[in-house]
Image (cartoon, rainbow, N blue to C red; front, side, top):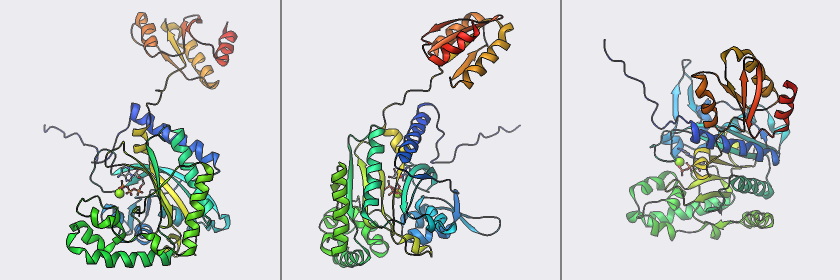
Length: 406
Ligand code: ATP
Ligand code: MG
């Protein structure tokens, strides 16, 4: 008989277990706690969307749309895409469900995303994000609120040290268009010195040349026209209000005039929290204002701002999370007591005490096995029921259960 080939996991996906999974779960739990502190409502959204949701809102010229999407035709002939990011799907849901009536909405979501990228440390084809958005708010205070929340989240995860908030403004549409035209003119004058990648960007997405990592591009990018010379008075005031709000809230930031972000829809505020601890994958959280996106999807002009952060990258940065431990471990010393053990387990768990039992293997070794797992309390059970405890067991709930058995 031919040997059966064991199927492999899809390249760029991860099976998470043990510490990796605990770090992941800790990031999500912390996010869920913090977003509630700020009054952000949760969302559950489809993983699949019509391809147009992304191609229209992100723009055909972006890396994500032009080369990273997992798109396929379903059996009905519709073009479907596994979501590569959250914002476009949230905007689609906002329009589909007529959520305009609730504006401004503070929304949050987390879950898997898919991009066909070259897998490496901190970069996967299925990865996960936490995401927060405020839709229908035009004021700079919405940008401040989101940044203060991101800052608190990173602090609560214990990774604010060594992480810097880099902030930029891309101006309003007239400012951004004037700046873009100046950049195209300037880069055209320096065409000969640009890298191959940047020559392609010049055609499709010239702003991206500014954050090119190619050493060949750096001197030209560094000397390029800056947005500051093209900002309208309104755009200047907006950025001033954002920075004043951050200062008042005690959030540290630095200006990075080359920060443009990959997606076409950004206006005004653009930001990234960046670390030097993850090599090339240094951005842990990024976002900005995307006032034009909902219009791109055929909706009414709707101001909005948001951010997303990679859960895996945050998980890599946090200190080890205490591993999950059982509070009360039952050692069944005699198999005739199994019924008593089941009853006690059920009582403990219903009282909110995590509990498990060791009831297999040589009765002599069961106690040692329990000790190895270092539970707070070890409860001994024999054919007559519970008869003794070792370990801490100071928990009031546990005490009262054991007293009721005595
Ligand atoms: P990068 O420049 O690293 O490709 P990006 O600009 O494509 O990032 P965004 O689309 O802004 O990233 O996504 C926000 C965050 O999601 C990133 O800062 C990162 O933490 C995470 N992220 C993005 N792509 C991946 C990936 N392929 N694998 C793991 N995490 C990712
Ligand atoms: Mg990317």
